[in-house]
Image 1 (cartoon, protein in one colour):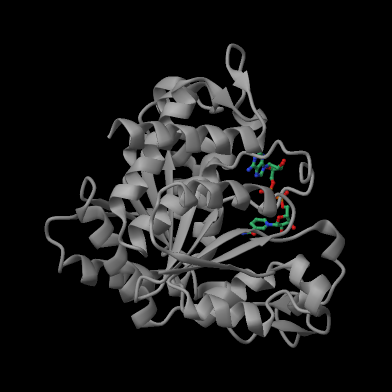
Image 2 (cartoon, helix red, strand yellow):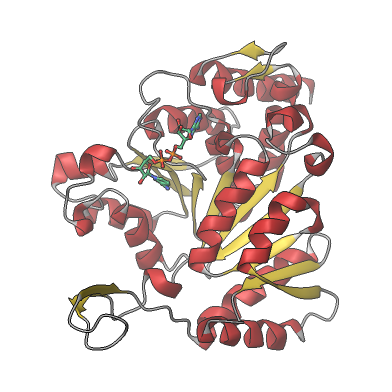
Length: 362
Ligand code: NAD
């Protein structure tokens, strides 16, 4: 097994170091190789996704990714900005299915901005299609309008598009994921207004016929955004397109209290995956040693489960995280009165200690 370690920028290096520490204590056989990505790679090689980093990612079974970006790169040409590295990795590795579980840990119920009764026990899975939609559709650009409300004016445009195979494969991923959970899929669309999403909905219904044991319902994205804060526990698996998924998965993330707790996985059809926390590089707290490393540590657990076939090791990481939270340890983003504030490194050390304790007992 080979794991590419791509820490990236900002808090990326701090949180990935903790996840690597946790992986190393599990006594599994794997090889790791670290490479630069994002702004760090731009500084060293003039490109956010250098050829050498892409090559390493392609030849690895899985990629553990921190985060990329910093406001200081906002003025660079778009292809050179750090965030392009993620888009490049998704495209080159064919990572089309993004899994974002939003689980509310019992000990963190109070950290959510919603009332505890709405959030306690929350366990939903947002599946976002990653390679299509308006993010990649061509043509796009700027031009002089020839029609519309202001002919002759400067305008910008993007193209929303999905092909049948793209929708079919993400539909299968969602139905198969639901089979392992409570067998319910909500497909989120905007079929009332957008041709692309009427097509999406039609295909969801067609594919759904192959999964008669899974209940399928449909929701417009505006209603889904509302229901996520009104009654989030109504959902089980939510499947949606690239843009709606981008927004809804962040909304779902915040339901659980902190974006610092939420892992994610992006998989291709051979289960090769990129695993990263749901948050960004947090330049506002970078270098202070206070970032929450748990989303990255939990991403490493997803990596063991999905790409490296090590479900037992993944369970051990997840139980260790639970026990550290139960012991009252909190980074600043999830801190509340009566708990113990710890640094990024102390949180990583506590997870390692919890794993080591179970190893000795076991
Ligand atoms: P962000 O997720 O980096 O930060 C949002 C807020 O959450 C900040 O206040 C930050 O301090 C806090 N936060 C994030 N992660 C945390 C953690 N682990 N522990 C404690 N607090 C945490 O989003 P942003 O500020 O909008 O973007 C910052 C940079 O990150 C931008 O350059 C953006 O483009 C980039 N970004 C990268 C990714 C990625 O690498 N996948 C994703 C989103 C944003």
